[in-house]
Amino acid sequence: RFNQRGVWTEFDGTGTVVGSGTRHWGESGRSWFDVTGHTGTRVRHYQELPDGGHVLADVGHRPFSQSFSGDTRWTR
Image (cartoon, rainbow, N blue to C red; front, side, top):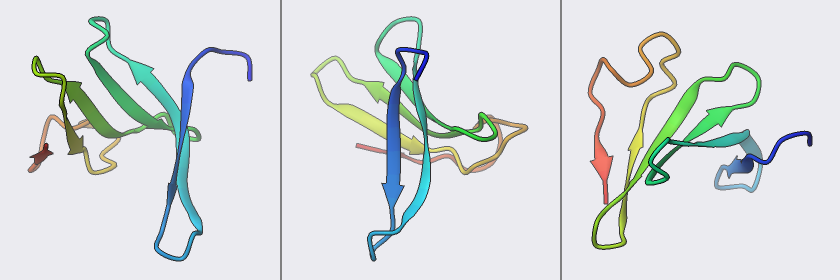
């Protein structure tokens, strides 16, 4: 690895790897994105809350809108 980005790996119920990539931090340091390694598509968006918790949005693997269209649901 030639950068300091974190990495992520997603497994299915049988333990098979179904996704992987890098983690990109926002300017504020309070939000971050999981990005696929091969296309650079954002797949998940996390935001830290003032109480120390965080929320997660599955941005639906939409490469052109990157979560700005469609039904994005946040989960705490």
